[in-house]
Image (cartoon, rainbow, N blue to C red; front, side, top):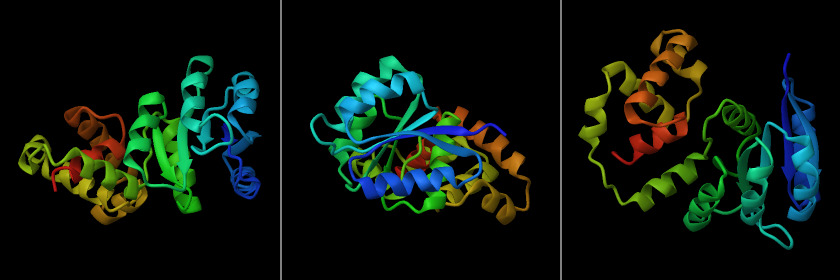
Length: 209
């Protein structure tokens, strides 16, 4: 089985070790490196080229956001910000710098592993708290019926379940369909809404509530 390789950039040793232990004890994941600051990350991670990097924002010396800007040209990793803080300015700055997701450190372990997998598969994982905060900052530009009109009844149902934080398997069970059928509908939703991931789709859904 192919393992998702993950690196951690986190100055809090306790948090870093906890994440490392979680990854190495979960089938399908392996932690290939842990860095306490941006300088160490810039020196070591390009050679490791992990699938996913979990990046703290408030690092000693250079910030995690600045580190992302410098790292992106050096490797092919998907970078997910992992932070204590809900700050819309920091979210947008991180995403603009090249991060593809933004999670809170209090994210449950199971959800964190799902987010790493989503990032590995090309998605843009984001905590629901962050998603709702980002949507709020949009100012409600779109109208609900504009998004609703693009989707079939089934696609809208799936999007509603996604917005509640349900996993693909849970959605399939709720709607009495297969997980692959859920994925098929999601591909159609992504195409219609011109988004790349379930998180982005939920953002559009929430912005039209």
